[in-house]
Every structure is written in structure tokens, then in C-alpha cells.
Image (cartoon, rainbow, N blue to C red; front, side, top):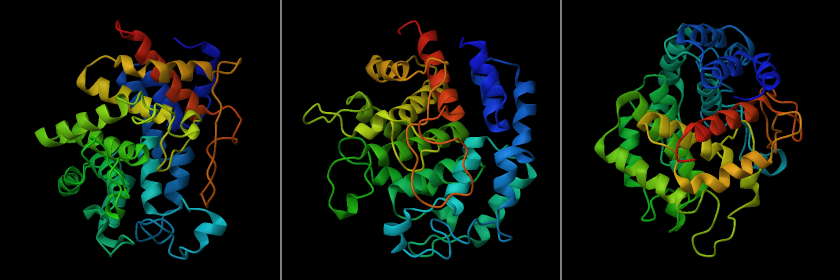
Length: 324
């Protein structure tokens, strides 16, 4: 169990943090954490984000980019995080109850009105890029949408090494950690919602092996760390990979399949332990440029409830396993 002061600090946060701390750290009865989870719709970050929704169900008038944003602005402003796909990702991570009125209304309106920037595809049909489609599968499966056709497309795009890469069409022959974690999260959510298919389960296992064979951070060719940024934790992750995001995924996968942690996660887990602050919290390692609706943490270098919550539940899962 984490120190009570750290848990009290988490419980003093947003409902999105509180209900997950109650479930994942305190093992409170389901009726208690579900009552707290229901507050996401009416209080805190969830209510605030829902209040920013357009009348047509979108956010900022667009699916991937705000309606008033031009690609040229990427260089000066950075990627914006205010459009529909990012809002839905946040609401899923907050734990907005999928059957609440706001969620049902959003799913319907987004399906009717939102179109992807790529070629005007209806939102819940997905588009062509692996990262985008992985997140769309995660959102759709979570909110009760039939995303099986997008899953089939993702399975057809899996690379020989077991992962995925959004630059596949540009000639990439090796998978990307960033692309792979986005797809794996989508396939896991699909499996949780529907049981998955034999093919989707096999693809997910192969994607996991791609990361595990590299101990979540190393190049297969040289044994060097792929990117030092992977050692620094962010919240929200947006589309980017880091060790905490990967470990939290493997925790959820293990809970679903009732399997213990793979020994190849040990070095990544040890890195998590080494990042703990003297006050028992973990700090936000980095933030990303670009428009966002509102901050959810004080800033880089400051204690982060999101990072602390996720780290503590990963460590709790790891340490409860006989194999660890």
C-alpha cells in the first residue's frame, strides 16, 4: 500500500483521479468508486470539457485538428490538442461513464457530424493512419460503438516485427513504439468490450512481444535506448510513448487476461521506482506545445496526480505478483 498521505493527496484531486485511486489503490467496493466515477460527468475536468463541446457534438469544429487551424501553424504553435479526437481520448481516460447521458449524446452527434481531415471519412469509420485508428478503436469500444471494421484494417497493417508504424506507407519497414502503443491500447479496449477475435488477440500478443523483446525501451539492433524521452513521463500522453504509459498498458492487459507481469518489465519498473520524490509523489516530466483546453497538472517538474496514480497502480500490480 502507498503511504496514506500520498493517497490522501490523490483523493483531494479531481473526480477522475479520485475514483481510480479508490478502485486501483484502495480496493474499495464497486458501488463506492462507481458513485465517485459518476461525478466525472458533472464535476471537475470531465464537466469542464463537456461544457466546451460544440452544438454538433464536436470540439473546436474538427476531428483531428480545430476547424480554424492550418497545417502551417504546426511549426509556430505546435500540434493542437483541442479537437474531437483528443477530447474523446481525455474523456475516456477520465472514466466518463459510457452509458451516461452526455456520453450517449456525444457518440451519436460525433457519428452524425464529425469527419476526418484525411478524406472526410465519418468519425466512427476511422481513417487510414494507425495511430489515429488505434485511438479511435479505444474510444469507440469504450463508448459502445462497433469499431470491428477499423480493427480489421489495423490487423492488415501490422508489420513483420509485430508492431505498427504510421509511416508504413512512406516506406518504413520497422515498427514504432509510439504507433504500437496507440494500437495496442485500442485492441485492448476492444477486447475488454467485446472479447475480441482470435485474430485481434493474436495481433495484440504479437504487438506486446514487440515491446517486451526490447524491454520497453531498447533498440533491437544496437541495444541502445530508443529515445531518452521515453524515461520522462507525461500526462496526458497524447500520441507519444513513454515507459509509464507502456507499463500501465501491460498492467491492464495482465488484469484482463489474469496473467502476472512479464519478467522483461523489471528494468522499466525499477526506473519508475527511482523517479519517486521524497514526498512520495512522482513529477510531470514533460508537457507538449500546442493549444489545449486547460491544464490538468501544475507543470513539468511539479508533482503530478496523474503520473503518481498510474505509477502507484503499476507498482501495486507488480509487487502483488509472486513472480516479481
